[in-house]
Length: 531
Picture 1 (cartoon, rainbow, N blue to C red):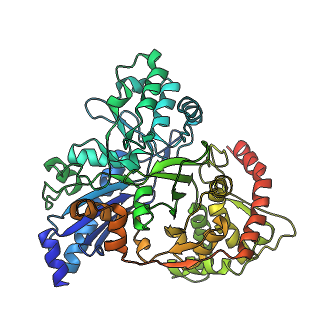
Picture 2: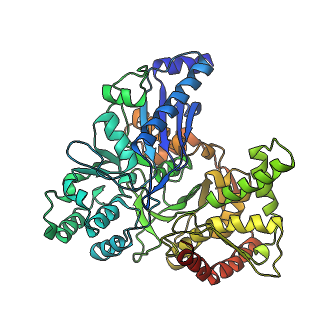
Picture 3: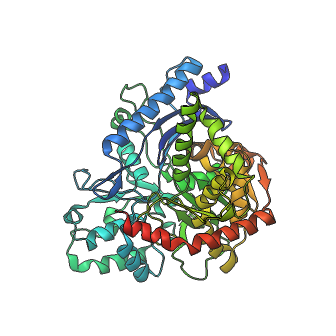
């Protein structure tokens, strides 16, 4: 304890802060890369005027509360006031759209990754670039605003992601890490920068609009992991720590998205490795050995934090519907008797799923809280369906919802593994879906038909991965790659616990998918009919 206290006082620590969909979390690590303090703040997106958003007040109040919670944890554990750290890194939900005028004013409410109203822009840009541009990407948001004839576009002087916004406000530097940037606009693998040819095509596409800007002029700079991307300014201190205890001048690494921090937290930045991040949304990341044969609507090409190509399958929905059902069961349980433990509730429900029928016994569910790009839904209606003679048990019910949570992910990855022949040595899972030991891991292995691995350290999640990127920038040796840093210094041979896919589980999941695909017209009818 005294050793850690000394490191905190001397700034031999590294801070990662990540703004996720439902929680903002800060993790402080020391030079052994182990967490020594944490802070958090719960929040939730708003659905206002047809847009999923968080207000600027939500963002700053949440960030300040999260940091204050971290500082309080440091004070409580070690009896010292947190005044400095060795380096800081910020991450957040990838993609989305934050557009500002020349005075730094936000022109329209923040549009998050969750919005599915950019289909026309996605289709047209994919055609023009010859490269799949998902609806979530920042450039799709910008172009959809142009197609909509939105007045604010002429005034755009800078647009970026949530992580890029925070970094800019705290350092004055308009910079993104390359992994985060790759979810904003395509990256040229040869240069590690935004693709100039595609920028030129975009400018030509909108030339008749007469805007006073060119695309390159309103996008952030791009930097790989390991580079310094600015320092905490006096103004930044006021925005992060209004009490003023934290000192200015702390170096910051390039901001990254939650995809990149998940890759770092699961040691999945080398070729033939991959990870699945499963929480509010679910996405898989597989580092590629070679380019895919063609563009696929279901697969995005992004990069690792150092710029290597990655095949990403992103699905908008994962655990939110499970959480809703768990809340219903909690409500019932508390009517029976108060004092239900949350961890026991989830552990019980997840574990009972393993005793269900492998094919879920004729039950089907769609966890579409919002639209789902993989299956072509612009809106969602959570729905549970069963055949009259189905085996309607709690075990089958829960297994159905676990399968549903990764069903869309399976559709995308079947293309990657079966059609493109991509191979991986391991897929590592992290996020709330994997919190109950062996359950989510087993479901993932069955869905993807690959060994599923979980590490104890991966439970620390994206904020820990961001802290590791901050530490990598500050402590790396000359020529030391991110992969070497993680292998030799952070994980030190830790391989985690791996479950090989069970053939009965695989066959059962495939049977479930037949029902899932057959009944998806009912989900479409629900979206069209329930307004």
